[in-house]
Image 1 (cartoon, helix red, strand yellow):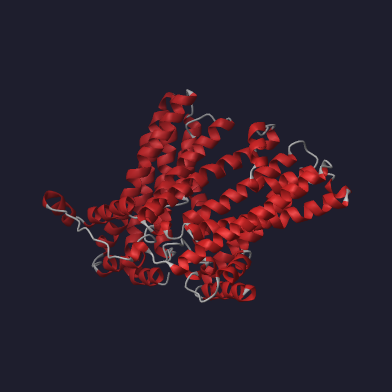
Image 2: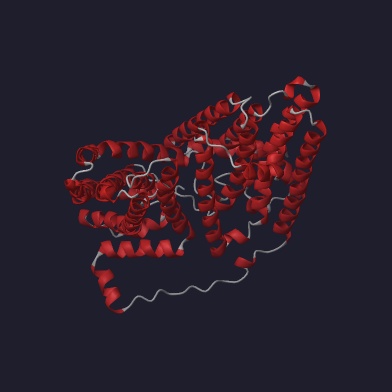
Length: 525
């Protein structure tokens, strides 16, 4: 069964990549970038061997990886890996025990597990000073790596199977979106601790003591104990890790058994569909303008659809987390709001059509003129502006008041709005020329390789956006500290609006010409 599941995952991956050359290129590029980053971090952790806090950072890395493996599946499901989707495994005519063995093996195949293995190896090597001086210490160090990896994988799949039914409902998906947001907060906190370690920042001792006593920290602490000559403690922690993996497999077995033998209550009876009541003046207003109608539809989707809501919540969280991370490390200026605008530009503007998927056919079928195509784009941009402009303004004002640099607030907001306008313009280009299709499967946000090309294009576009607002940046530098710096607020806003209007003129025509092709791409998800 192990060979069958591994072959199944490879076959699914091969089939997915064959559907599109761009998808294959994106998968390869994304995998190489992720693996390169993991190797770079792992080498840094390994070279810290002998440093006073190397073992503490090993505990932090292993705990962070375990949290990521637990939270990401709850937020994004199987992530395109159908061989690990519990709802699909449950319908197979195979006993749960054999399913667990096969699903565990298939979950260990791919770029994600490989990057995790590289990071775990680097962290363990960094904490292993003196551990190889004795045979028990070397044995503990070697066993800690696969046990830590297995703990991440098995815990992830066991939790996903246990909550498979709960996450199919609306409340479950809302909870999943919140889990994704908390994961982002934790990831930024861990990144802050790791990247500032070289500047003398010490990990809080109480945090290290707590993490060392948690199951994810046991393998790293076992290596430290073996290096200190406490072989009994090291073996006990490894035995505890192995026992926990066994208990998680028992829980996983029970969850799969329930999925196989019980019905899904969410589909046991037909749900009642509430008809939207849009009457009177509001209905006439929406009917009079395609822009307002599309914008209303997008706002309603953000309010009702968990996938839409998760995307916007995550984008707003990233936009505010950048300033929250930068201010404590010494960047005390409202210009950090520019970083928030840049991070927002990496996420939402380039997926104008992805969230609608194949449902966009009604919009395509009613496009009759280029003006209507431009109205379609504007209607999809307006809800994002409604969310992000007040959000960035509030963040900039908060940072300016907290740091006492209110003299820089107008210029910072001007640069932010200019960058926001340019990223929206580039988002229109990416959405029209490189539409990003979300899979129909609500458990997934991408198929293998599907998102790599999009994210790479979006990242390159965001870098180009920074270059495009060079005149505004030069103005901010030249006017810094002067009484005329407030002029950058209207000038930056006008610059961003001009970028959107110029791009809209071209992209509206391209959308009118390429709308059927975009619909075809979105239907292939």
